[in-house]
Length: 392
Length: 160
Ligand SMILES: Cc1ncc(COP(=O)(O)O)c(C=O)c1O
Image 1 (cartoon, protein in one colour):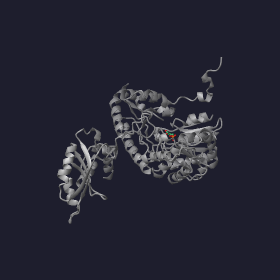
Image 2: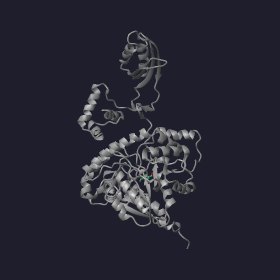
Image 3: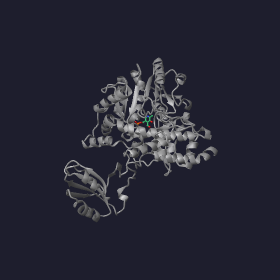
Image 4: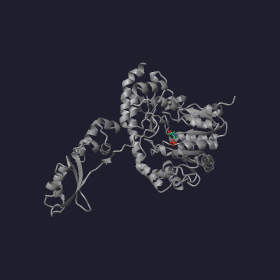
């Protein structure tokens, strides 16, 4: 007997569980009249002048590959933008890599540094791809849990407790998908100090940085002596509503960007030139649109969080992202059961917190990247089934 | 007041309570801000924006360019105001360039537009010429695109 097709699938790939979001998606997408608060991308269409830049690139015949690192003009704009907004300066010639979304930047960063058995820490609940991406590099992902009591901020004592010898890097994501947690300068300073002490790298996914509503967003890359220890990852998807362009970037020490380049050039070659042209336009002239969208998200956030608290679903006011993360423990059901019940009875889709790791249990993720009108309707629908949620 | 105005300009039909919630200010403050705008003639009125395709067959729209002779006292003002008073005139602007006034006209039929032009406008002393352009199709109406962009059926219903 020969092997069956599944026998050919590598063991470490077999071991990766299917994404919890996929399961929920399969159920939710069959319900045509449901309102989705489950969307992890802006509801806005990319601002017209940015789309127009991509169209213009096509008209001019820009249909080629680019430099593996990305167009020089784009890297130059990224350098200026990161310096101005994140207070970290990177040389566009060799410290910046344009990638296919922040997703690819994260992947090539891990592939550049992880050797089999290396330990990579991350804080959870978190974006779905961190732990699987580490596993795909034969690394070991080590979670540090953040909790609702602390508004899902990182407690350095928890980090110290979770740390083990052999930790090579720590992936952080502030503001955080799915919790909306953010980090203060002081917390990042403590983490930076610990990283230096234990000699590990920080991979900082700051994709939601622009969507910070109150106070400053601090990049750990800007802290004293951290530039050589941080791989800064960012992208265009959230701030400029450009998810479909698949454009992101990584900034870091030259040696690490060089190493990331190796995977990137063989696996991807380069990000799409039309997207890169659009990216240049976004960085140069997209600020006003970004601020407009941020203001809309802020208005919706205030409303939706108010409602969840009214419903007795404890929810802190997230300082960043377009996610609210209400607690549903008082209904006495798992987050998957609660999400299904709300979907079936109220026709509102929210992602169960457990899709973002065990520590997300007890919560739902409600994205407010949808119209005010949709949110109002969704909240009315949930209000109408509250007695059922409480009793069933 | 500016915040309230901006929100109104975005064209969502919100009541004062909703506006208050969005802007986190009391309903009474929103109402005061609106009243102030009305008093200061910043806010002239409330109108829904309709899709012209659904206005029905009995609506004809046109733009009319008017050349008029300026008068010694008041330049174009007297004639412009006089022309503006006709119910068919929805908007009236003094323009730079090849003509003086640009009117946007709403009427019930082609015939009504025609008779408005030759009986009413052309006969006014001081109007030296008219040019009438009929609207054929609307692509954008007061900031609203008539082709929807949000119906992207490929956007996943739930995503990470
Ligand atoms: C925390 C986080 N990082 C990265 C990404 C992926 O972004 P991109 O579209 O740039 O690949 C997402 C998208 O949901 C995210 O939430």
